[in-house]
Length: 451
Image 1: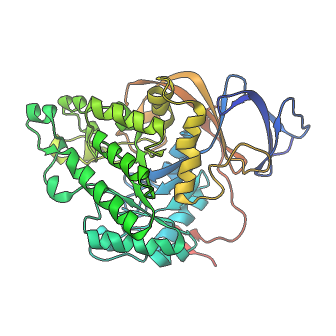
Image 2: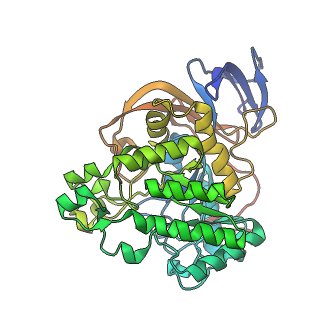
Image 3: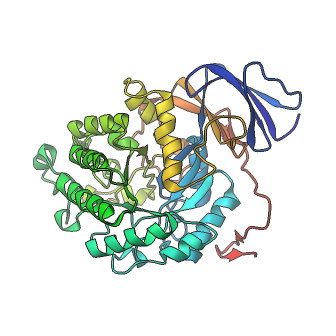
């Protein structure tokens, strides 16, 4: 049997009719009924759903500089197990990914790991300081070919700077991904502003802090004719603003996280810092609006906002705890529970919001492709009938800060094919994909070497 030829038998393509997929030399060589290849390794797809590999537009891999929280290696292992074949690595590393050198380092670390396609996100401003634009053009022209820029974790709150960034990225078809948070409205905020925050006596984080920035930025995007992406939308009002903007023809896309589709601020009553996140968990009414917005296309994609932290940064008093949750290995299951099992979406819709559209937003040409003959073989097999209980200590990510700890979730990733190579088989890591050629790889110190 050939190492690079696989025959998936009888999997339901996008949740539809059961067919065979023949994968050879990194592409889908054939799709149909009763396919045969004597050289192929046969994989039984009965009862499984075949989907395009998921693409995450919002991942924190922490490297360089914060390897105590996550590395490109551990984060991309988690991504492969979660059904992802591409992730966009956010810029808030140390040093910040605000130069061509840093984004090339992250990109080369991803290639050296070989579990998924790592697409660095460049910072909008130098050092995320919000004072001057970073080297946007240099990052776009680098080997990393950056097309998404974000100061995620910090809002680009200066409207003049935001306008300049939107104008600048037009030259190379880039997109600015905004962390919508008016800092003066959230100074000292600890959780969603509402009934629960009043009872707990925690400083509230008002919905208008998010909504006001989105309203401003969609108007700026309209004014300059540029692409805007809104990170982790969390309120019903934000959904309405994005819906209004799209109705006016403004080129805006938006994402929602899995945890904002399921969890509410009622969980904060436990004072467990695992539920502390930015933006904060909102109300049940917000959750329902987010689900409806994702179902009707107002919200374009699911982005995990995978944010691992060392245990000591979360296992402390609420006020001192870091904000963030892990999400790569639970995303598929949470979306299945909140959107598919509720009847709001089909598996074909799932592919649209987790693969097809994210790849378009990030301009990742060989990801998010149809499962058709001649297309790149980035494919996952999912068992929708599986049930599993989340145990953060059994995950590949270094972060143990999963808000779903102990919760039973539906659906599991059985296999992940990245560029035609099975990085995950039988629900477990197999072997990474190995790139050919002399693309520079990082040495032990993290520096990039090679031509």
